[in-house]
Length: 498
Image (tube, rainbow, N blue to C red; front, side, top):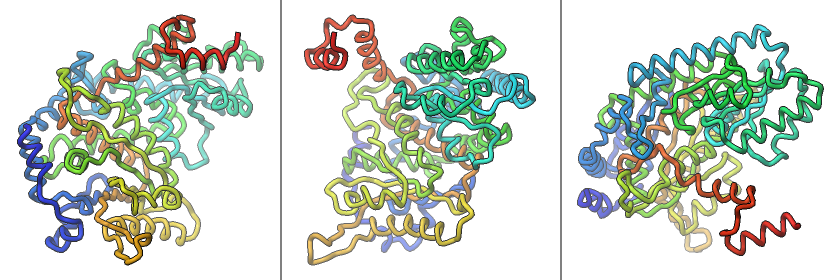
């Protein structure tokens, strides 16, 4: 495959302006629609020749076969010897896994309905505890879709820092609070410490049976039972669902309870539509594939090490955070799935923010800095507020104007006022931000991440790099820190003097 990569990396370079001048139909040729989302790749440096080269590379790397293996429930997570079956939660995958997912979802729905009917007493507040995907996914969904009149006030807490949890405890009523503990292994130290603090608070507030107010979301139900949760309030999910892909499973319980079961079903339906597109569309018409080709072109041919994501919608504030984990934990690897050195850039460093705030913070670098940063703009045609139209018109036009300015630039005899232009961007425009469209958008990012991994030959479903720092922290907490470096020992002594 080296020759195919070299052909891509040495492909003759045209500017974006030249690509538009030479192809009057460029916009129609490099825009695609799916599930109420419009994807505009025309302001990237992809052209028909590069598309053909990437298609040749992808065929040689058996990308289409890997997509089939993903949906068939094959053990594509090689290092851990299991499948990656988040799509089974949406109805596509191994038949038995799809049936199991549907059965477990029915169990979740039954608990939601029981709580709504008062089976656990009056509930006004929900504290959802998790970390990583067990928190980022639910928090993104709640932040994006809640409209302010929900029956429950729900907070998602992940940080072990007590300043994250304490404000909720000061505000909530213990006898009206439901504690949701989300942990795939049910051994996550940060989550269980936060859970114990909530239980202690409940007792301090006079709650005689705090464990009767706990729901556990886990792939290790026996551990939850051992910890003290009643089996009837444990919502399991499959071990073959990775944490950062788990919002579709019972990890989404707090979302289904807060936003309603129909919203959760719509979320799954939107993702299922994107699954169908990804599974059936030819590579050169496949939106996640085209996005990954663009990613790899900039990473390998243009040596771009970062990608910036800017959501021009306050409701999508948490999307860059969510994508950081999805992409960097999945593809931040230095070896291929068979243990060989990768020898090229892996995941881009994903960062970003919210428009228009970011325009007054980081866009100086994007327009005139020495770094070439592919930019991704997201916007929503239908506003999420009832204020006058000037707010939303201004928001969208700022988004479109920034992408135009990055491409066109502006020449000036004054070097301080010279904008080089030819800076790439993708614009993703949603018709509306609802559960179904958001489900399709998140599934798009999942599949894009998978294709990037397939092109690089790495396993996107393990995350061993997360473990070493945890081991070091546990050694410090247990006092087994004899082999720590002198700097770390001095930090420990300074923070915790004898």
